[in-house]
Image 1 (spheres, one colour):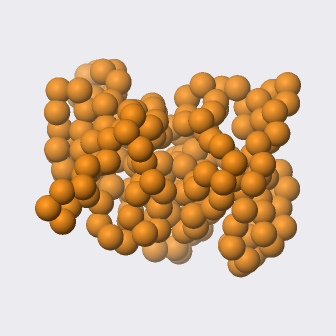
Image 2 (image 1 turned 60 degrees about the horizontal axis):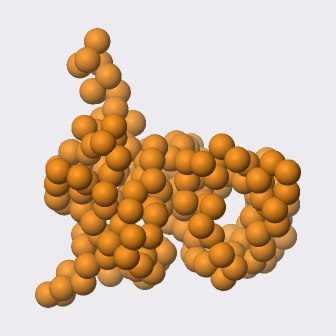
Length: 195
């Protein structure tokens, strides 16, 4: 489980293709991997991945074909920045909202900067739109955000300076793909109402 509060902006060190997908190696600041164990979960752009190797300066993960199909990790290139969050521990502060690290869908994104505001607009696949509620929670590349606008084909969030500085959302180019995780409480409420 995660909270959607990005703890580290990692940098892609290596992408090594193999039969099952690829191995992703991410450079991290010293201290981020303190107390880490092989087999631990880390959200990478909001996608829960398992640590296969690590040292003080890098962490490696296996990215399998199913993960490639449903996330934006397939578009990564060397030196790209990725949002990282270690898993929640009991007793930790929950600054965002509870996330599973299971990406619901990908979305095409556009970053709009105007009049002192930064808006991130996303086109969301139709089957997920009913779960996007005005002022509801959503995770974008693993960052917990509040829905500010809902449109026919998607939604928007507004980004504060802290989010722009501490995540990769400020680096999004037109039509880049982002990972979306729908708030599970919203999904559960809709499912209960439909039964």
